[in-house]
Every structure is written in structure tokens, then in C-alpha cells.
Length: 130
Image 1 (cartoon, helix red, strand yellow):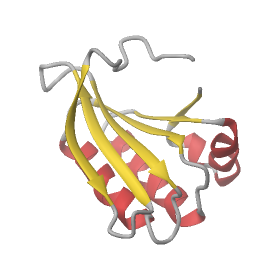
Image 2: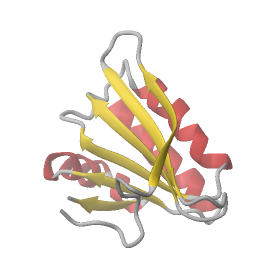
Image 3: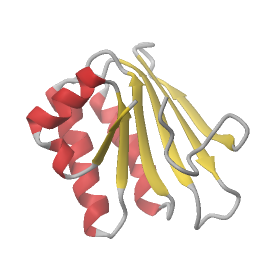
């Protein structure tokens, strides 16, 4: 498994918030790495399908990244399916953060990476296949 240098590991992260959709279709956990608010990563780990039903919830979680000075990392390694609405949410968040000089990194498998490439989202975020 490839790790981002300095990325959160099991001994360096703490859970900031947890969330699960009422339909039990999606679970997201936000963790931070580093004690200082200006350093480290803000990681949103997603488990489950990202589709038209869950895309608004993803958008709400990504809203946390806007005000946080940490590097935004969206962990999609446990996402088996991603729909157009979720791709649009990720693209919009990536563009918004890039316009403010903040990078956004997406961790995913090959199938999700292909969806990010075909949709052009990989032009607004850094995609790492792990």
C-alpha cells in the first residue's frame, strides 16, 4: 500500500467526527493528523456507494474542508460505486479549494480512478490509486 509522506496512520490520527446516513447507505469519518490546526491532513473516509442519494451528504462533509487549513484528503478506497452527482460534488469542491490555494487529494482504487479520469475530475484534484 502506498502512503502519502506524513499521511495519517493508525497511531497518528484521531477521529474528529463520524457520520452515517439515515438509510445506512453511506458512512463517513473525518479524521485529522497533527495537533496544530495549521498542519497535517483533514481526511474524509467514505464507505459505501456515492450516488444521487448520498452526494448531498458528501457535499456537506466536504464543506468541512473549506474552513480547515489542513490538506483535504478524500479516501474513497471503500467506495464500490460512484455516480455522476458525486463526481460533480468532488469536482466542485476541488475547484473551490484550488481557487483558494488548497490542494485536495483523492485516494481510490482503479475503478473509481477511471471514473474520475473520464469525468475530468482528475484535473481539479490529485488522484492517488492505492
